[in-house]
Length: 362
Image 1 (cartoon, rainbow, N blue to C red):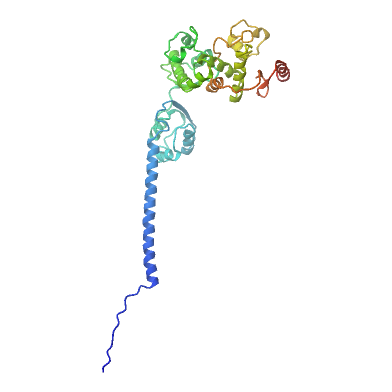
Image 2: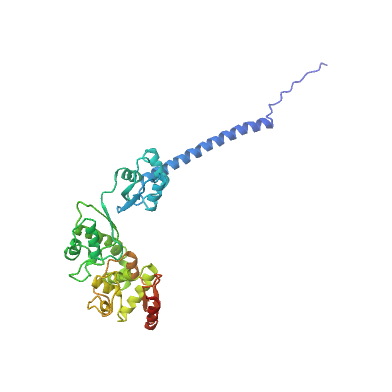
């Protein structure tokens, strides 16, 4: 019997080393693909964010102008920080990138510029490259009187002396909040102190007043109108009180404390004793008041006449107006403003107040 030689066919065997090598290549390929996708996605999002920052202003509905002062030698990064601090940029890096890509970083010059929060980055850059300021920038500080505002505008060469004062009494303005003020009075108290931009070639006292009343309408009448109604006082009474607070106190805390004291004194029929009202009557703001001054026969002399004075004694700022609306309740009836440290000294009784006068007033 012959022997039959049987041949066996063995299946191909994939050894572990081969399997790992194939999977390693596959894993690497997958990692590379995933990395490309991630990088591409990141780049897309980054570019999308950049385009958003370029096209989106900080506040599309805010066209109020902002003064920016670019100092000599400021870098693009420093300029970006300055714009950011003025709330004119959503992104400093987008601003700097736009400058580099458009080679505008070497075109920026030092100077004063007028910008707005409704401007996009390209518009801001264009203004910085082309738009040096030509308007007069006038800052009316809190507590200025109409006469002082008039003098400031005249000193800037924008109006003739007295034009602003006369117009504040004689010109007609269509604002509803003016209805509750006494007839035949000027606009003391309603001219909102702020920084304004005026065209040197065409500014009048009436135009300046119109813009200041518009600012008051927005920032006080509209924004604080409901709070005024809830206060129990008319807007005119609030402005009269705020004008005294502006002259008597410096910090917001003291303003609210003084507000409560003066309202309670007025409601109780006690004379307010606010020296600033006498200063207003005499237009004597810096020199010390004399005994004769304090005995001045004027309805603004709150040492002699009880209740609120007949009108505001200055144009108060927002902090003083808010303090008049929302006083901080306290137990004091008197206060001193003339201390070397500037600290307000409060007293509960007249005797205590007189002792503090001897102690603190030199």
